[in-house]
Amino acid sequence: MKSNKTFYFGLTMLGTIVLAAIFAPLITRFDPIEQDLMTTLSSPNATHWLGTDAFGRDVFSRIIFGARIDLTIGILAVLLPFIVGVTLGLVTGWFGGRFDSFIMRIVDTVIAFPFYVLAIALVFIFGPGVKSMIVAISLVGWVAYCRIVRANVLVAKAQDYVHAATLTGLPTTRILRKHLLPNVISQAIVFSMSDIVLSILAIVSLGYLGLGVAVPTPEWGSMIQEGQPYLLQQWWIATIPGFMVVIVGFSLSLIGDGLVARLER
Amino acid sequence: MSYFTYVGKRLIQLLPVLFGISVFVFTIVHLIPGEPADVLLGQNATPARVAILNHKLGIDRPIVIQYLNFVWDAMHFSLGTSFYNKESVASLIIARLPATAMLLSGGVILSILIALPLSILAASKRGAWRDQIVRAVPIVGLGMPQVWVGIMLILLFGLKFPLFPVSGFGDTFTQHLRSVFLPSLSIAILLSPILIRSLRASMLEILDSDFILTARAKGISQTRITIVHVLRNAIIASVTVLGVNIAYLVGSTVIVERIFVIPGSGSLMIDAIARRDYPIVQGVTLFFAIVVVAVNLITDLVHAALDPRVALK
Image 1 (cartoon, each protein chain N blue to C red):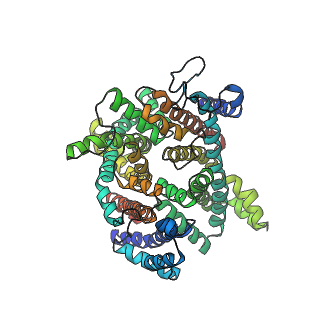
Image 2: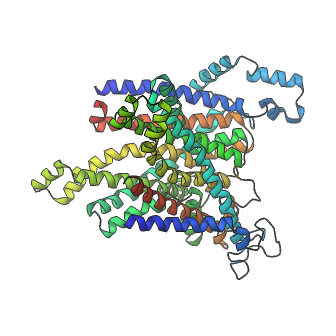
Image 3: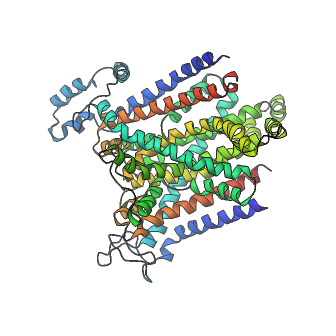
């Protein structure tokens, strides 16, 4: 019962941020990119709820427009690796053999690289920007899903219901899709919640390093970087974007915990 | 399986990984759009000059030969020279290494200092309010961006209460220590939640086992049971967790060094990216990957030495 409460709490928090991001133009009347050099670095007040940054841009509006960017990329960067990783995990776990060991060696190699070093090297190859960020995070991310699903398939393969399905002569694709997949996917779904957090963290870090979303676009990581020189007087400029990430991360981990309880019933 | 067979098996497992790493790092240069010669020569690129330079860089040779040359050079710690200032990449990395090593070891030490007491506190009374609080640490902690943690530390201990330097590395050893404190703490804040989770879980598991019951029956004091019986076994189990996360940790030094302006190997990579200095990006990527492989190997070997059951599996 308790996990149910925290699950809905997480869902509500995340839902609020998502709704704010979707209806951003209705919530704030300030353009997140428009500069107003007459009112730079102003403190929070009735007009500018969270003050303005060094270019006189409204911080509140940049935060909620930034949610659009960070959440969208964060989810997109998990979707592709989820599909690829789950499929590969199913296939390698089921068939085994040479293809399996080949894929597993690739997995070992990807794991050998520190995540940020590999992501930064990949962004370097493809050039900074949203697309290469998604590609870079995806190229690293599929590995986890592949390992999780493969491990579960190896266990499920030995179970009676799978033997029964094989004995009835069902086509392999049908066994994989209808019998195995629903039984091995739940752990991958739970992991995807914390993976979204990891990919948002990566986007924020790359944005901070100047390798992510191009500058005038509101993005939480680059907002932290732009706010750093003004930490002493206008601490909120750099603090609030990071705090948003913490809230998103917190709600996603509550949702993840709730999913564990639901899926493992 | 004896310990030595285990070591041998573990070393053989490394070969495909090292092959994969070398192939990826080698390909970086070939995947980047545009020729290295264009970057080096810029405005002065004439076909003749490009050809001469390509010959000098070895790019006109067959790709397999290029790869083998690359591996041969890497095995002799020759990682090429920087496009930017013509210095040897290997010596640049080595010069930047002490800062990164101090930062990393500081992070590991601080995270153990944070995680150990907290997990003992939590596991010693399961379900109590102190356990609940400690269990909440990872939920919040794992969602914090490294850059944000770093900046909050700068704000708190660098600017509001100026106890530690917020940027640079200093000149003397004491200055180094003071300079890496906040950066190391920012790493520890993100590493300790992971450690707490695994330490607490393994301590609880051990507390339920029969040998603890035996120890209690023998009338051994709770403190002695916690330290000698529970903690020792829990730490062994957590060595692997620490090792696995060092991979992630090594990567985050890239970011931490940027925040605190520490001249380490990670910031070398970021500077090189801005200048499109391929050999450095390649060299640092290769170096970090080798470090991770080595750490994982050492972790496994230490784990197997501490817990003979590992090698038997």
